[in-house]
Image (cartoon, rainbow, N blue to C red; front, side, top):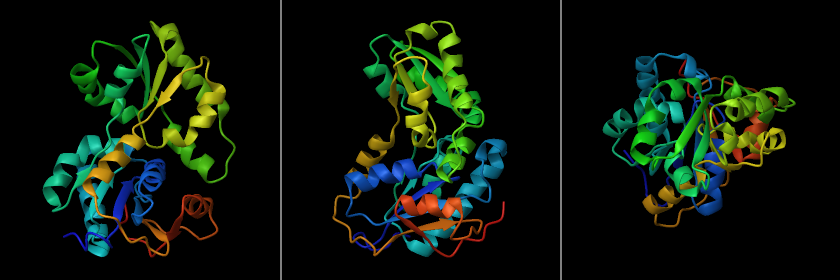
Length: 270
C-alpha cells in the first residue's frame, strides 16, 4: 500500500491538533521528509467515544488517507488511539506504524527523586495502560497520575488564538503537588500529544520547578530509523481533515503556523 519510498510522505495522525507537537519534532530531525497531517476533527475529542467505535474509526480514517497519499509510514500521534487501536492498525496496514506511549520509562530514568507526576487524558488514565507501563518500565519509581480533564480542548483553543485558562493549568499541577508524596515530584510526564503545545503555559503556572517530559523527540528518532533514505520535500506539507474548516479559522491558522496547508477534506462524519 505504500508509495515510492523517497517521494511518499510520512502520515501523522491525531484526533485533532495535538499531533502537531510530534510533527514539529519529525520536521526538526528530518527536514527532508514530506509530511501529511491527518486530523479526525469530526470525531474530536476521542476521550468521549467508545473503544469499538474508535478502533473502527481510526482504521477507516487512516485507511482512506493511506489510499489517497500512499505514505511510507504512519505515525499514530495520539495516545488514546495508540492505546485502543495500534495493534489492530498494524495488522490492517502493509506499512510501518509508529505508536505513541507516555514517557514512563524515560521519566523513571531521568528522575532523581523517584517521584514522577503524569498528566494524561481521563481515558488513558483510567484504561490501566499507564499502570501496565509503570509495572513494566517504572523501575520501582512512584508515579502520580492526574487525569487532565479538558486539557486537550484547552490546547486546541489556545492554538486557535484563545487566551489560556491559567486556572485550569495551575489546578491540574497543584492536584499533583497535593497528592501523597507530591512534594517530592521532580518530573512531569506530558501523557498526551496535545500537552506539549501548552508547555510554556504549564511552566508559567507550575507550583514547583519541574522537568517536563514528552515523547515527541523519541517518536522522531523512530521515524528516522524507519525512513533512512532522504526524502523529496513537497512544495508544501498538507493537512487533511475529516470535517471542513474555513481557511480563515483559528484551526487553519494553527496548521499554517506549523507549516501545513489545508487540502480537500476526507469526508468521514463522526
